[in-house]
Amino acid sequence: MKVHSEVDTLYQKMRGANGEELFAFKGMMNDDILGEILSRVEDTLSEYESLMKLQRRINVIAVEILQNIFHHFEGVDSTTVNDPSHNIVMFLLSKGKDAYYIIAGNYVPIETAEFLKEKIDSINNLSVEELKKRYRKVLSNGDFSEQGGAGLGIIDIARKSGQKLDYDFITNDNRNSFFTIKVSVPV
Amino acid sequence: MKDFLKKDTPKTPLIQMEYESGYFLISGRSIPENSIEFYRPLFEWLDEYNTKPQTKTQFDVRLEYFNTSSSKCLVEVFRKLEFLKASGHEVEVNWYYEEDDEDMQESGEDFKEVIKLPIHMHILEE
Image (cartoon, rainbow over all chains, first blue to last red; front, side, top):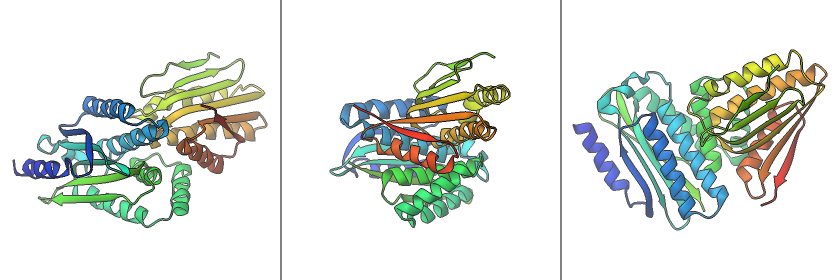
């Protein structure tokens, strides 16, 4: 399958590109696998990182990316994500000299990729103070919808990371994009 | 009215809502996949509590970390307590965080800003 070979290439390129690899996964995604990834990330961090607050910060960013942005995203048309040929996720955790890196990617409908791109671009333009204000506004608006949720998730990741969020997407047909997000967490 | 009790799991917090004493506690992690489903029974319990509340309600939050969908649910819990306070009952919230944990401190400050309740911040010494 052509699509998967592109993901394979990307995955190979990402491995080892950001310091020491602590955890890497590429494969199908479901609730059990999501839980497994999170517990492996948690175990790895408790081994490598002595600062509890940093362990928690990275754990919660991993949770937010996998649950909120990817797995449970109820965007414009999420049916294609359930298409088995597009059910592939990659997740990498590595440690460089000054930061931990989380890189995660999965297929999303093109509309969702556009939505995420706009969301991340607008969030990357905000100062620390503006991010705080935006977070509090979305937190208090009483909107339980997943669109609001994904928005809050991205803002939360940006605040906890303290860095600009990096993303990329490969679009190889007119329905889906393989969307990748990279979050750095300074040590 | 019965107490509302839920044991903690690696993904969900301990919840202990005692009717007679009006003492509420949530502690641990809150990262369930579906937070609304997880918190719904608590919302329902609080709605019932609000029909015959104690004079004083104390809510202690000792969370380690939580996902953003849980934070939306916490807002909902606080809204119900705001309603209680607005109807003349005493409500006090205590937010605990570890000394160096800026993320949990910041979260407490976020809620302090958006919720109309006295939220007292407490540092847990390591």
